[in-house]
Amino acid sequence: MDWWILQAVTKKSWIMFVNLPSANTFFRLFERGKLTIKSTLIRIIHINMASTKKRLKGSRPYQPNLAAHTADQVADWFLARLDTNAGDTISPLKLQKLVYYAQAWHLVVFNQLLFSEPIQAWVHGPVVPSLYQRFKDNCRDCLIGINTNGLEKTNFSTETEDLLNEVYSIYGEHSASYLEELTHREMPWIMARKGLPLYQRSEEVITVESMIDYYKALKNGKKHKSILSPTRFNIDFELSRNP
Image (cartoon, rainbow, N blue to C red; front, side, top):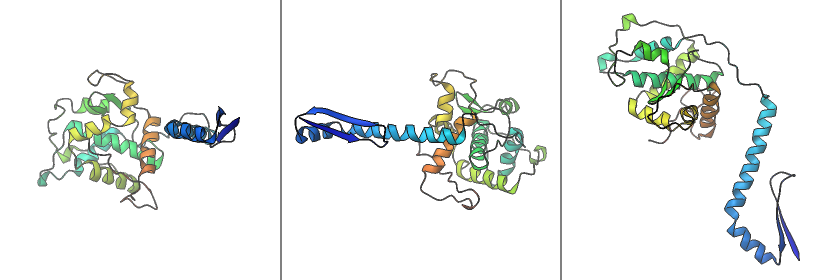
C-alpha cells in the first residue's frame, strides 16, 4: 500500500496522504483539493514571514517620535494651497480626509508622526476631533470660507512639503464623498470600528500601527513608480480602485 507525502514549504510542515491505493487516487484527490492545499501553503508562508518580522522588529509596539507640527498647521497648509481665484473650494469633510492621508503617508515615508492629535473612526471616515471643533459651524459638506490672511504659515521641511503636495495632487482632485468611501474600504478605519454598523457613532482611535501596516503594504504592493523622487521616498500614492 502506497503512502504519498507532499512536503510543504517549511521543513517542519507536511501534508500527508495516507493509505491511498495508487498514484492515480492521489492525483485525483490532489486536483480536487488543490485550492485547499494552496491556501494551506500560503498560510504557512505568511506565518513564517510574520514570525521572522516579529523577531526582527521585537515585540514592543511602535513608538514614533513626538510630532513637530499640529493638525491645524497641516489643515492650514491645505487651505492655503487652494487657488480660490480659479474656483477651488473645500469642505470640512474633504479637509479631514486630506489631513488623514497626510498623516498616514508621513508615517510610512518618514516613520514619524506629522501631528500628534488622535484620528478617530467616525461615521463619515477618519476625523481629527480638534479640527471638527474648529470647523463645526460649517456643515460637513458646506464650503469653508477661506481667508488666507488668517491662516497660520508653517515652515515645513522640504521633504514634508513635497509629501503634502503629493497628497494634495493625488487625493485633492477627488470629491469629499469619494474620499469618504475610499477610507471606508481601507483597513485602518474598518479595524478601529470593530464591526460597528456603518451609521453607529464611534470615537475609537485609528492606531498609528494600523496606518503604518496598511499603507506600507499598499506602497510595497504597487508596481508603478512614484512621481515623488524615488531616491528619497520610493513610494506610490496611487489610489485604490474607484469605489
